[in-house]
Image (cartoon, rainbow over all chains, first blue to last red; front, side, top):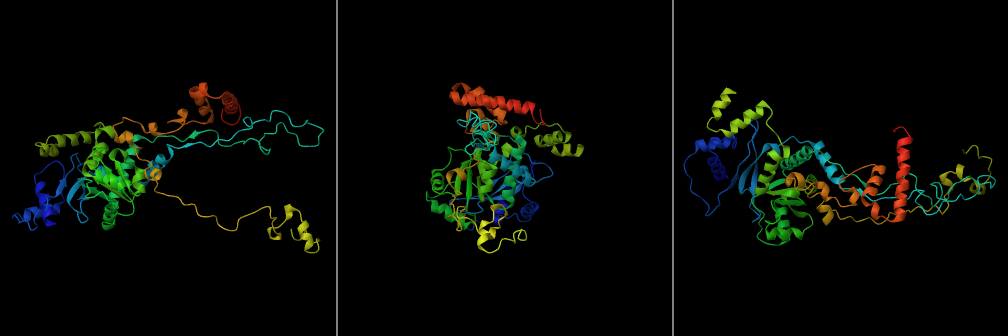
Length: 308
Length: 128
């Protein structure tokens, strides 16, 4: 554990634009500099990943363990930084609700249809004369008050319930869902989805060992690059599902108890959610311009900070 | 109610009380059958393929570089994919898109419905 922390701290030792590990690890590096001999024969180097995208100055990246699916005990294989705007936004439950309800309803087409009095077969003739027969007056035998008559205000034809939420609301819904999963310890990051066997039993045992819960959603980056073992194992199980990164959505994240992302998927999601495409932001405010300048010119960073 | 019917002497005559002023405790005719046992519970599989994979690819636009829109995922009648309208709008859209290949009776009913709804929406009620 200490080796991991020190190795990570050493990798981050050079000062960069983004904030690295917490102050405690930096102090640990500065205090103990002597090389320690490797106690175990062949522990692999820890998998470390940092945020490529610029992090706002007032926030630090969130950290998460990187796990591995190759063995039952291989938790904490590495450490990764996650962008705070994606994995640590405000927990907007109202946005989550909006997006979940949108997902449920926008595809809905209701096929319920009833016949009106004009469409029911027959009923063109007046059943008996207006006056003189002693019975109530009627114009047709298919009016809504008659048995076998048409329905007055029933469902009419295939109805669609389509609507679209603004794109930014849908994007924010994804970010909030990822934040909530991470905050509630239901998000696990994995270096890759490689399994030692094709047996579905291995996955269930692994989930039981690590206390992941009843249902797990595995997310890989591309459909073609998924390892054969995972595909075979998850196709045999109902509650363990595998989707590509394009298929990620709030409903699936809420339906499955645990979410397992690979490192390339995390990079893809951060790029989408903070990149220029989804939000289509242009640096209009002065603060934004100042911030970009700071990130681009590393050599003159301190000078700019002093000036502005 | 009991006071007004007190003149009906004897238990036999309670059966002749008309249905409108009848109390439930007099008994219900056996034609109005209500079940006294629960039906067998309906077993619903919450994790079948459709329910487990519901909602996947809904964000194909924002995550997939905007090559496809989620409205292209909707399966249904041609005149309703990725579109919403009230009944008159739906009838008009159906007539424009598939009216030339409908059955004659269905087209006739559709035309009648359009003219009825047009007159209803534009001439009656509060909103014209």
